[in-house]
Image 1 (tube, rainbow, N blue to C red):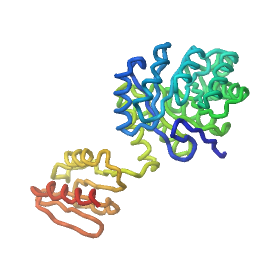
Image 2 (image 1 turned 60 degrees about the horizontal axis):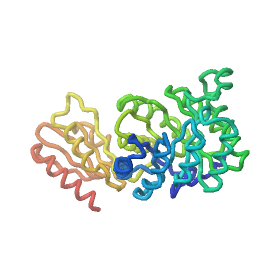
Image 3 (image 1 turned 60 degrees about the vertical axis):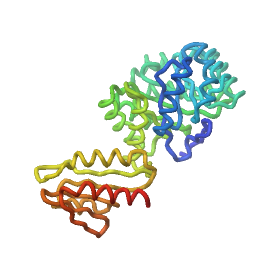
Image 4 (image 1 turned 180 degrees about the vertical axis):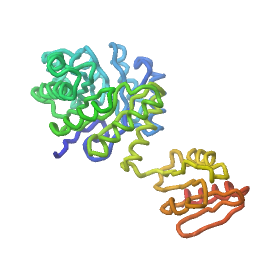
Amino acid sequence: MQKKQVNVGNVTLGGGKIAVQSMTTEKTSDVEKSVAQILRLEEAGCDIVRVAVLDEEDARAISAVKQRIGIPLVADIHFSARLAVKAVEAGADKLRVNPGNIGGERELALVADCLKAHRVPVRVGANTGSIEPHFLQKYGRSAEALVLSALENVRIFEKYGVEDIVVSVKASDVPLTVRAYEKLAAETDHPLHVGVTEAGTERMGVIKSSVGIGALLLGGIGDTIRVSLTSDPVKEVEAAHGILRACGLETDYVEVVSCPTCGRCRYDCMGLAEKVNERVRGVRKRGKIAVMGCVVNGPGEAKDADLGIAGGEEYCVIFCGAERERVAAEDAERVFFARLEEFLRK
């Protein structure tokens, strides 16, 4: 179905480009630490940042934080419609509320009036820890319960005139998350915020998020993503861009492909691949660099690369399209990096 579009500050959700989100780990009322962390997230490529609002101090701090950052700010609210109103009044670009813990229709109506007055969108974010009790009792912790819980609250906001709505239905269980979003996507035209909640520490969290978010994006589901990691939030942003690139949804970067190596490899392919990755990190240029372990079939496997290298014990082959350059092994890294710099300058 045709997707609605929602503007969060200067970022449009539902317009085709997938926005990357993360969330700060500092107390929002500590303005200096919050701003410093958000600026790091901006540098890493974060499009939208979310902050927790636990009390009035946090809500008031939103105004000061916004003055010093360049990306839209979302206020994350639980349990208090009053704090939601204060956060919007302080300048939040978007509100996130959780069905099942913000209160009943009366409280949501209060929030709705504030959202309309300030023309601020809202994300209705359901997860398995905050399913509406009557749906939980009837369906248990299921895709049906998640979707029905979210959509019930969406309809309340719509009833009170709020049109700019984003929806999410997250679980820490990857198959459950995917089923819930597939069901949700079939039943609403609001933009979808996609993620696997409580995914875990960095290694397993990235794996679970890549499987869940990647599966949904490849199926055309999702307008903005957040990778949830028990780690530095900058790593969330890096992982999110990695997922978008793997799904073919982000192309303005230099891709580095490298083989897993085998017993034929007779040079430091792994070390070179790491150095190349580090050199092109953050480069905004479309390209493909290949670091292959041997000359048996390395050039053939990476023939579509803009620049590549395949190694042998005595010599390496540097290739660019149909061109081949045979270089002594001891000179290969130096020559290859010179060719890489030439490519990056083009």
